[in-house]
Image 1 (cartoon, rainbow, N blue to C red):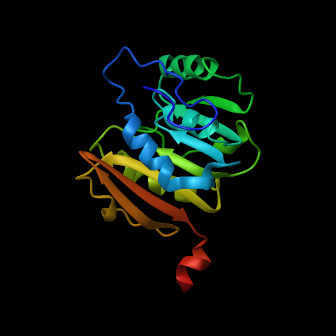
Image 2 (cartoon, rainbow, N blue to C red):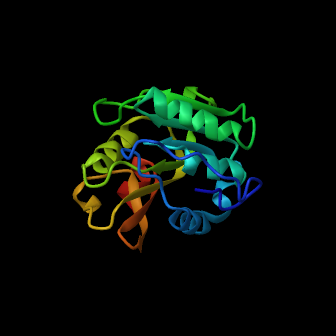
Length: 196
């Protein structure tokens, strides 16, 4: 696994010893950031189900202002810290220990690393466990997203994300890469949604 763009392009990332973490492939990550384009520059990133931290670290390499990494194990936190240190010392990066499969709300994640709301969110849950649908609903209720925030969900291509009833997250794109699907959402206010 390597960083595919930005200031740390080509730097190698440490992989997990456990097969319980499924990192996003370099090819899918490169395609994802190609689609995001300049929106990553100066963004405040939230990396949910962070795993190795590859998505948030790639964003930092490409010019993101800060990143908050969320995952359920201390081991994951250590791996992310190792990967961050391997190419830069980034004071605006934080790890939050949180099991997204069991919590009922996301709390105030924007108090870590940045006092402002997030405008770029990555979500890469274990495939086909219905976790993406659950966390999308929690994101809507959490009051941690900036208006116009971009949310990118990586799931198995056969996942049915349309089954979830979203009020302020509007689907704007979907791309398929082999067995992987990428869903793109934009956060809009409830008033915008009502008048759309």
